[in-house]
Image (tube, helix red, strand yellow):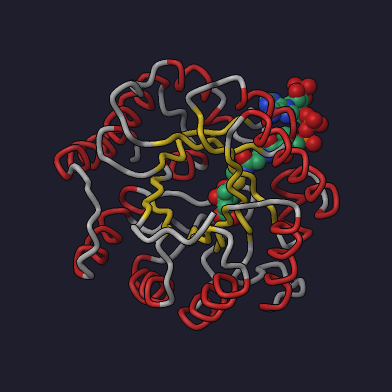
Length: 287
Ligand SMILES: CC(C)(COP(=O)([O-])OP(=O)([O-])OC[C@H]1O[C@@H](n2cnc3c(N)ncnc32)[C@H](O)[C@@H]1OP(=O)([O-])[O-])[C@@H](O)C(=O)NCCC(=O)NCCSC(=O)C[C@@](C)(O)CC(=O)[O-]
């Protein structure tokens, strides 16, 4: 899997919805996702097959999926899984192309997020890769806490390179460097993106950044100027991982990212009318 030449936009309503503390009705999720499926994103990170006790908001992922208008969409579907049971659940759905797994370089976050440690999580990744291979699916490994550690554990760029190398050795072909709680800086984004994509040219590297609204641009710019062409984002910047901390730091807002990429003359092939409809509908579900 080489570096993408064309920009890939990964829209993440799953991330946007997972921490919302009231239940978004299944019907509204379906309507929202169907609007996003018309927009022309490369991938829709639409839901997760995880414990409903951990993430009650997404307990209806299978039902939502069964009601999506995927027939005419060119967008590929990605579901997050956090254990092998979730992998098996996701693999039951032929319409899912990507299974995303949060592999953390922080022991504390791995435990909080998946109730396992890094060693066990690495075995889960091995099984995930093998199961995806057999089912002709692709795993996307999120390298959580890639840009810093909010719990005071060791963090440095060598650690990120070390864990990336372990994942690549096991066959990971897409790795998304994730700033789970929004602590990245333009400097460490630039250094890490450049370092990882240069050291592992055989894989596709993306960024899944969280950011306060005031500094999204410098972070995206640092990734883009260092060759990043795979970006995760969410409409109006909603989101964050409720397993990481009590206060959520949102995603990069899709509409800001689109504006930035258009300024850089990137052909995105998006249907802006559908995106505007999705933005309007988002006011109904995020309040
Ligand atoms: C991984 C577990 C399940 C381990 O949690 P556990 O407690 O060790 O699991 P367990 O096997 O002991 O089971 C506990 C309960 O969960 C159920 N269960 C167990 N597995 C499943 C499953 N697959 N589907 C449905 N139900 C499941 C199981 O049946 C049982 O139910 P009970 O008997 O108590 O009623 C849990 O920790 C979990 O679900 N974590 C959620 C992780 C998650 O969704 N996090 C947010 C997404 S990742 C993210 O946001 C980061 C990312 C991707 O954006 C990148 C970044 O920013 O870093």
